[in-house]
Image 1: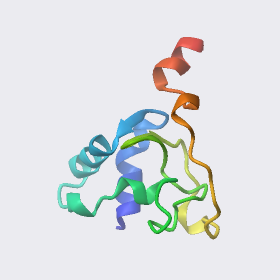
Image 2: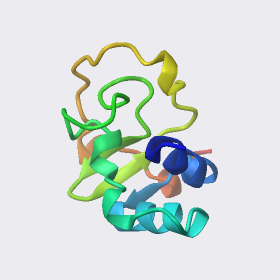
Image 3: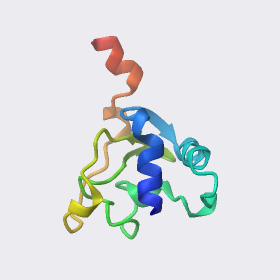
Length: 107
């Protein structure tokens, strides 16, 4: 199982939440204790790293980076096997990001 798959499974129930990279790694390691913490690179699965996982900068990315070491867990990312070639996707500016607390307050 790839790191991408392990991370995706570990964070599935946290969709829409904003977590730090450290929290995301902790979730993955809690779910997969045999996973090497140093090989779980959150930025590789988001809009912040061009040379990361093939999901980066595609609809298959797992996270949207909103600040230094802060990521929004994307709900239902596209399957990585269907990820198109990378295209430039703008990161969500921190002042435009919606947190879980803001979303539930407006619902």
